[in-house]
Length: 271
Image (cartoon, rainbow, N blue to C red; front, side, top):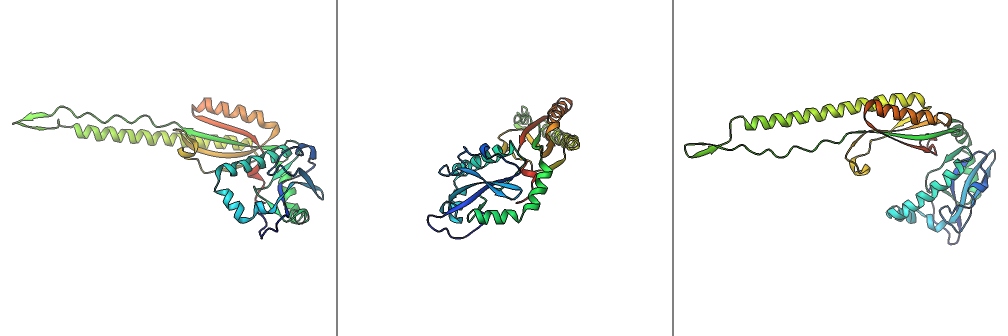
C-alpha cells in the first residue's frame, strides 16, 4: 500500500491503477476493477488523468493485505483485475501503470500525491508512448538422458577368485568425463547464442533490461533458460521484431520464445 494507517470503519480509500494522458473514461468504466461495488473512473490531475476506483479502506489495511499475500489464488485475482484495467487504459492512450495496491486516503490525497510526481509521469509517458514491452527468452536444449548404469563385464576367474576385467573402471570414468565436457560445451554454445540474440534485438529496441533467468521449477520445462530479457520496442517495428526472432531461431537452431506486446511496466520506473 502507498499510504499506511488504521482504517476508519466505513471509510473509502482511492485505489490508483495508472496515470494516463488523454484516457477515454469509457475504456475502463465497465470493468469490475478490484471491487465491483464501485465503478472504475477517471480522476483529473491537471494535464494528466489517473484511473482510480473507490474501495473499502478496511480491505486494504496492512494486515488485510499481508493476509492476502499469503493466499495465492486471491492475490492472482487482484493482479488480474489490476492488469485488466491497466491494459484497457493503455490500449487507447499513453499509460504509466502503477504497482498493485497503490492506495491513498481519498481522491484529494491521491490527486495531491500524484501531482507531485507529474514530471516523472510526463517523462515516462514520453519514453513509452507508441511503444510496447516485449519479452525474449532463449533456452538451451535439455540434457540428454543419462547413460544407464554400466553393466559390469563378466568377472575373470583366477585361482577360484573373481575380479573386474582390466580397464573397465577407467573406461567408465572416461565416459563420464566425456559427458561432462559435452554438457559444458552445449551450455557455452547456448550462452553465446543468447548474447548474440540479445545484441541483435537490442539494436532494434529503444530500451532493454536483462532479468534473472527462470529455473526449471518456474518454467516447468526441461530446457534451460539462458536469456530472460525484456525490450521496449516502437509499435511500428513490432513486425520487424517478430521476423527477427524467427530468423534468429532458424539460424541458430535454438528455441527462442517471444511474448508481447505488453504494457511497458518495466520501462516506467518506480512510482
